[in-house]
Amino acid sequence: MTTWRRSFRARTIWTRVRLTPASRVSSDSLPDMEISINELQTILNRIISKHKDLKTDGFTKEACRSMINLMDSDGSGKLGLVEFHVLWEKIKRYLTVFRNYDLDKSGTMSSYEMRMALESAGFKLTNHLFQLIILRYTEEDMAVDFDNFVTCLVRLESMFKTFKIMDTDADGVITLNFSQWLSLTMFA
Image (tube, rainbow, N blue to C red; front, side, top):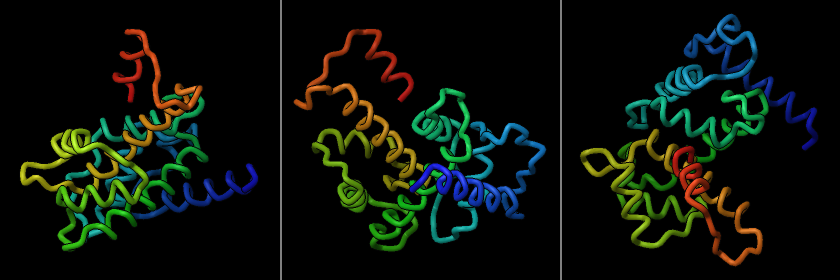
């Protein structure tokens, strides 16, 4: 897809999101046409609240920060139109995966459903890593709600992408000094 078409589609989606009555995000609050963490949180929570079949506590600031860190290609700390469009497409894809693997239609995922969903999204993980993910992203009832599912996939995608970039010889091994390790773990 050409840059122009991508930009046009992003503007169209942005306009639809911005003008949707449920989102109540005015152009006055976004004079730079970029979306901050707080604005992203407002947009996502208002949109996701329309999906009554999903159980969610809403997207946290930390979840929105992770999404912006993954998508922010110019280092502005905000999402531009094209960046938002790419994120929006990811969230739509994650919603499809979530609904396909929420086998009992509870609006949440059990650990079994989560494992299948992660594998279908392309993440092959060891049992140990999967158990860590379940501990990190489940609620008290050991179920994963939609916002935690998205946050998990965004973080996994970010870590996989970063590893792939650093694994210059494609041998599955990277070497990090302490500073690099801190940078990766603090901002992933």
